[in-house]
Length: 333
Image (cartoon, rainbow, N blue to C red; front, side, top):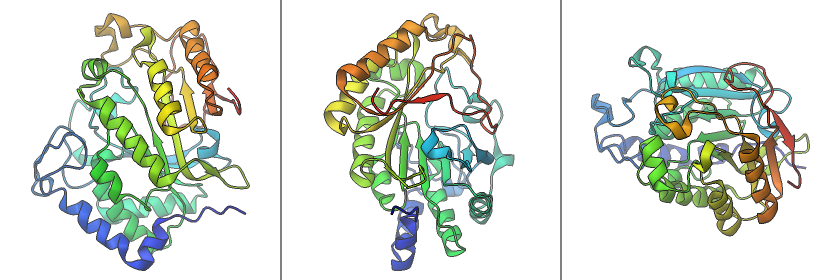
């Protein structure tokens, strides 16, 4: 029988979690939490690319029923949406919190409060704590996890990331994070720089996903159908082939493994500044999405989910709403 006891509980008992908190916190003195390596002193109030200081920014939190079935389950995922971001995607669907027009300092919370949020979500019956856009607040999150674990937090942690993560930081998360949920956004650094402001996204995201696989392994699901450990990769299909779906799926097949669980999404729509770019100024067509599905067949990637294509022009999920994630279980795509 598979149970959902979180890995950080063991690290708390051995004292290793305290060591990780200290190591991650020290990285904020000359911040190298993510591949930007801004080297600013966030403890003294300096801000780097992500415009974030020492305290974490919690834009919102909720019981979220809109993730993949193994994440949301029946009781929902305890989603905590962090403000700001280490990317600048011109088509970001949550740009109001990732790239705010005015600073989100009023949304800063202390470590004790972040721990309380985690415990509240656990008390509300959530299957996991879903850390959305955590890369630039990793040190602060682990600090809060230690506090929450001392007070009874025990459900798995989901690291829900854009994939632009540092290997050094990820290695300090080994045994703390139970489920890795990274994006694989691009297979071209030209496109990642043009549309997300990261000239080295491909190498960093692929190295990060390989490390996540090394730590967590393949997705493990409990007897009641809830993910308890492992890797689940998300890939959003972009118009005009800009995401490089063929190359990204081939990377998964060749280096991560055909048994990897994948969530394929069609929900792109032009928002934020996407209309400024002709290639991103329209939704994904059904033919474009079908091409990505065909590559799944060709590469033999057999586990995961694919959103069911809709012809509607706009998809704007309410990230704290109850609308189910539109998926079909593709046990064999």
